[in-house]
Length: 114
Image (tube, rainbow, N blue to C red; front, side):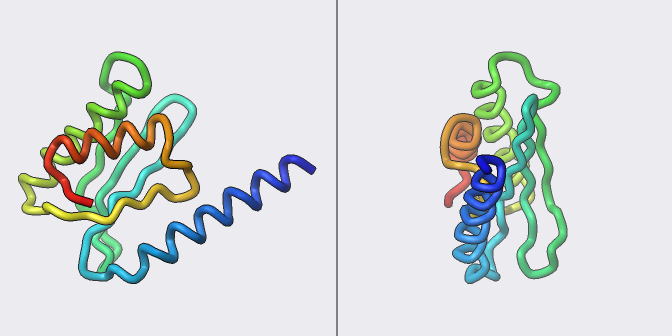
């Protein structure tokens, strides 16, 4: 019973966060995927659905939250090189807490606005 409840809560969070993002067609989307070991982030063009930039923390050192922060900084540096200054943060079904929050703070510190 608890597994079904978890899946439904997770799906509800994902639908809620994605429905707010769909209204911004002109901005790029920063999408986050969190596995047990690593965190992955990519910037996606909302109009075409093409992935513009990807970053992973698999080759960085430190704790998981520090690696996520550094991945956010690295992502924002790559985005600024391509001329992307503003994005919409898509956390998917993950809560804005821990590694997801750390990645977002790193991207903000690197110069991205969202």
